[in-house]
Length: 178
Image: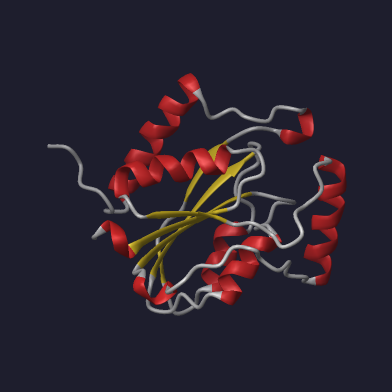
């Protein structure tokens, strides 16, 4: 697929999801877009957790500062997010509700604290019913709760790169080296 037809959107609080988005971009090209909120989450982790739990409970979709022009020109959209409260973060839901991805190939990727993706990939399928949703990628990143912010660097970055490459080959986005 031509790189100009690929969009890589991600939400990253601790830069782990951003690191994976950048690895994906190295392999497939495309435009990298960070999701930013009109009113950013608090710096304080516990305050953010409380706010997110509230947003999830009430179904609140925080407005995005990020705008993606001409979403129709992209055929493939990678959507990256951390697992928050075993779910997809509300800002990612905002993006998927705001931008209709009908007819596009949607590919989720996730970083988490080791508990897995939760219901995140299922939510992508639910919010993109008219899209072709491919098998997602998940990897353990940092554990912000424990003050372990950024893990995907150095040796871990090499390991992440290998895993991302294998996943991209498995879902047939890039060819395997012969």
